[in-house]
Image (cartoon, rainbow, N blue to C red; front, side):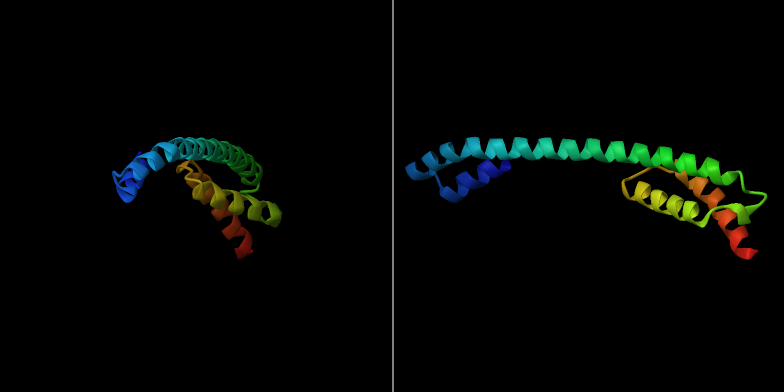
Length: 115
């Protein structure tokens, strides 16, 4: 609605300005509603992607944690995949649940590098 008020103030209260405002209002309403629909879709997609990443983080963590006593058996590609999933999860606004799992993975990775 601020956009509509801005247009009215730019066009003025002249007859032409009022007619222009009346004609542009439905277009602006359509654009705003469409933008809100897109924003809601983006939000739902982000939430879905975050959930998928969360599941993958748990899956990789459970797979790698089995090697805590023999870290050299942990696959480098799996460790790298965990790091990528974790980074993307955090960028999407993921909460701190994965931080503990990352610490576990980092311990295993550090032990693997030390050997």
